[in-house]
Length: 249
Image 1 (cartoon, one colour):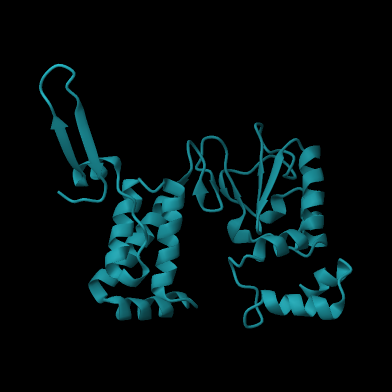
Image 2 (tube, rainbow, N blue to C red):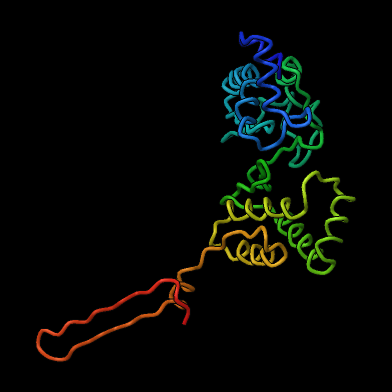
């Protein structure tokens, strides 16, 4: 990081000070406000070269952090040495030689476990989000989240957290970890989605100190409201209605 800042003409002492502010225990933390800016600075030349390559092969290039995607309305023949592979994981060696050279020249290596190809007939996932018909999360994400909440409900928070730390070596508490996952579920599926609402309700019961806001549905608002109606008989009679929010019948 210091080297990137120095290459931009920033004095070394200033670059080291900025790096110290952006790092925690000598590492760049995930999700920090500075992360998008730093990743864009580091990937500036990479983005430029990949954009030129995408134009030459008539496809679209997108990047989110270190997740790179190529898409097209036609078969992605240009990004492979020969024809596109079968849907699913593929060996990075199958990529176009020029494309692999761009990655290597910028100091990046393609993760073999995450190289994935999908055609129009297969499941398409980008950064963990299903993009076939509409944006959605993978079913496995929901199943794993429910399984983690089930562990908390049956084993208790202390035992479930010990199991979580031993299995995944997480650096944050189980509550914070699940809070982020449930919040992300609501962000993708929507606050009124029944899957999010049921999952968030279970989370709030398990971790009352970390409760997530669950907005009431239109039906719940009507059920919880009190309507007071006054009506006068006769010519020119008028009716007045008062709607009181937040009052439980």
